[in-house]
Length: 324
Image (cartoon, rainbow, N blue to C red):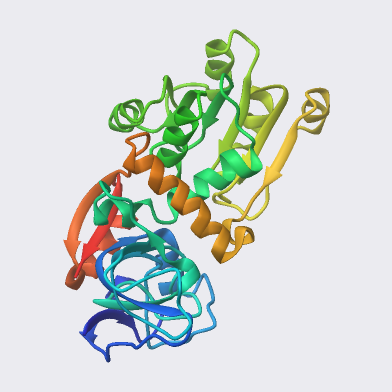
């Protein structure tokens, strides 16, 4: 089969499209014929060795994908041959999804509901479970609350906007351009704030009549945390997902104390493999019902994975999908 592998760490040029043996499922594993794999920032981090993994090169990269089960290993009971499934979290201690076939653990395989395209299922991947874990599991979002999503046009941000809206919240999204604002509004945001041109704190307070927002989903913690404290309502929560440009962050302690602020950190890995799959299954049902949908920006052949990584590093909107 064909796969995209790295033999060393570096830029997009280290991605090699080559022949490798087709894997076989071991006990509790299933073999998936990949029909779509999505490109994620974690794939870049693995490629650059900024996210160390137990498996050394040469290795196939790629974390998310979807396709059809073609074989099952001994002891597999919940997944059958011929089922369409999608998955997330591959390529850390195993071979990844940038391939014509991939082996995944039975617990990672999420059946794709009827009415949901395989490529759309793949694009739900990591971003929607991350947004769900932030808003629902950690943030306990409630209908009628006001949610502000920092970085609303990105992969996790666009998922967060849709999920918050689906759960009955009023949604405000920060954006960096008119094109981003148009996208975020099309996904259900009630208001957008251009962080390059507007004072985010002042505008958020204006949009909430001075009260502040109930919940912030923060994707650039080190840059935005002080502003988040200033724009939340009394008793407001801030769910922190993305580090941002610095490994450290500061906040105005006095204002945080005065507001009874709740600061919540999260990592989707804490949901464990089966927990992520349960969240993904719920999100897939929401997508099949039309309540949310992935944003796909470009679709490229698997052989053009280098180009996909170059696009990911540039300004772009929507998920990049690779098709074997």
